[in-house]
Image 1 (cartoon, rainbow, N blue to C red):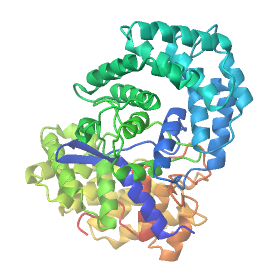
Image 2 (cartoon, rainbow, N blue to C red; image 1 turned 180 degrees about the vertical axis):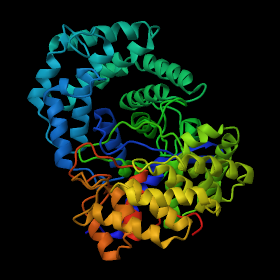
Image 3 (cartoon, rainbow, N blue to C red; image 1 turned 60 degrees about the horizontal axis):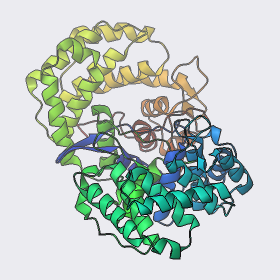
Image 4 (spheres, helix red, strand yellow; image 1 turned 180 degrees about the horizontal axis):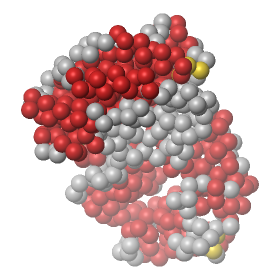
Amino acid sequence: MPQEPELSTAAERAVDAAWVQTGPQSGGYGRGPVSSAPASLYATAWTLRLALDNGELPRGLDRKRCVGWLKQIATSPGTGDPALTQLDNLALAVQGLRDLRATVPTSRVAANTEKLRSGSLYRGSPTTTPNWSDTYTAVHILSQISARIPDDVRDGISNRYARSTDNGWNEDINSSIPVWQSATLILPRADRQKHAKALHDLVDAVWKHGTSGPADGFKIGTLADVRSLALQNGTTVPNIPASWFSSLQDSTGMLALSARYGPDPHTTAKAMELGYRAASSLQRFITAYVLPTGWPSVPRPVPDPQDSYYGLALTRSWGDSAREAALAALTQQWVTHLKGTASATLVKNSSNAFYVAALARLLGVPFPKSLAYRIHTALEEQALKATPKNPLPIYWAARFALLNQHPLKRALRSRIAQLAPRAPVDVASVMAFSEVAKADSDPAMGHTAETLAGQLKLGPAYRSQKSVNQTDLLSTAIGLAAAHATSAERLKSIQSFVSGDRACLLPLTTPRNSCDLNTRYLSLAAERDIDYPINPHD
């Protein structure tokens, strides 16, 4: 049976991960990855490194499954991330396995690396051009697994290294760095010390260029590689002030690749090599989005009123008000936008209008009475057109009326009374009549909702329609509320949707499930008898 502390902790992590700072003093909640998203090799390899920096693996990661997946890619790199080259897939799989202290299939990795060799150089994939960057990647892989580096490759590195140092690094830095990196792996330190001045000049040039101007992920990656190169060759590099990374800091605790992109685990890991110390929210974010096999790619969430409403409801359920001032500032922007929105659009986006109004009420943001009346009137007019097959306009009209303490018009009450006997047995009907019961203090409508909900019950949980055989968390939360379920009934009803760190829309065993801010809220609403959606008057 799910324990309340586990569920609350998982919800707290999901809320932290969904928060997005939209300005110096404003922010909101948005929808991040869902649990149906597949694990990404790139995200997994680098997020794993970030997780281990904290000293332990997150509870939601199944080490055995993760290792098995990484070994499959190491054995057959074509099955890895299609956006990456086969060599990069190999490198990340080996990195992940080594970080997990798992056995690397060395013979297969060496054979797969050899397939990508062309004379003294390596290529990323069979159809790409051999280059020095891929050559270093391949040599690094072979060095990590203690495999033999072909003589042709060793000779090629030595010859190019000699020419590069003779030229005093007056050539393309993008090729100079991997040449020196490769030489560092195969040449004795005494041989490399002869060219200490050349290395110093290279490091100095990269450092001056890299730290000038604003930070970005590409600069950070290059600087981290050069720092490692310098340390391996007895050369020091200056410290980078923490403020240099600030423009890339994300609310998740990660750094972004650039201001235009979302959080990037590779950039963050490389920045930490340079001395960057991530915020405490990073480990919460890492735990919130872990899958059994790894981590999905992490797009930047876009704040929206619905997710912000659920985020606020969740944080208030455990007494956290730290972000309310920032959310209030963003809500004020949304209210201003609603003022200029046509009535037809308000009706079309009725849920959006409700959530903005609800946020404003909860956060003390002024909401013009004229705007509230315009929305209320538009929603009631739409509700008068509701049909038994689509009663949701009634739900939103009643919900908004309850929010603003507006009585339902007589004509709408009459229309609802006509529809009630013909209402289909589905969760939309339960939602509509439950809201009418609360907005109009009508026990008869509450009884109608309870009766319909009873017909949707399937085992301990609820389904969306009588004709379907699968329960879901939304219908269960609504059904439990309509049925006035006991605490014991509630705990039993959510067992199939909630387990430890996961709270999903469909039973946990269902493929392509959804797990987001909404389902986190629903899990608490179903368990604790929180009004769905939470009543802003409470």
